[in-house]
Length: 202
Image 1 (cartoon, helix red, strand yellow):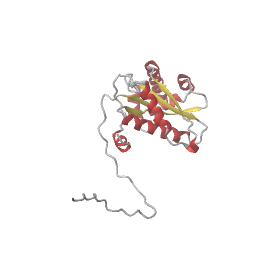
Image 2: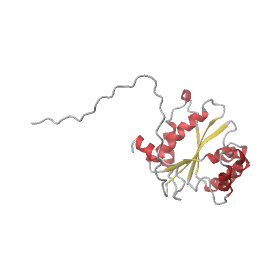
Image 3: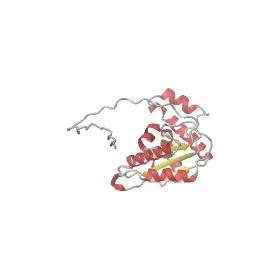
């Protein structure tokens, strides 16, 4: 699959098969993520791969409680309160693997670097027939002392991108995109007509 096809095929997958993702594929995703650009080429990201389902269950419970504690500040508090209060709602959707991308919190562009790495990872997953989803619900609790302890993250590190990965059970339908708003400053390049070369007659 070429990169443009992978971009268009990528979906936020929230329905996974229980089948484990081979270690080699998870390492391949991390390798793809590590080829993302980073400020000053620092490459200061850190990848934590979690395949322990009991730990993912625990993080889901703790992260939901954390989010409910600050529900009033959310944009749609009633919707999220119902969702996060549901004991059957699992923030990781029972995906077989979680990859948390973190970086030193003191880094000026830590968030941007990790986001770029996460996009590479999700596009690589799409190209390999895997589903992925950035789980924002996990970020708050993972950056607490208990969250750092659960993942053995250093105190000065910030968890930026918790991304679940697995084999999709179902794929969301394609989502239409708005026409991009473009402000063009400067001259546009001349567009030459593309023609197919004519075959020579013999």
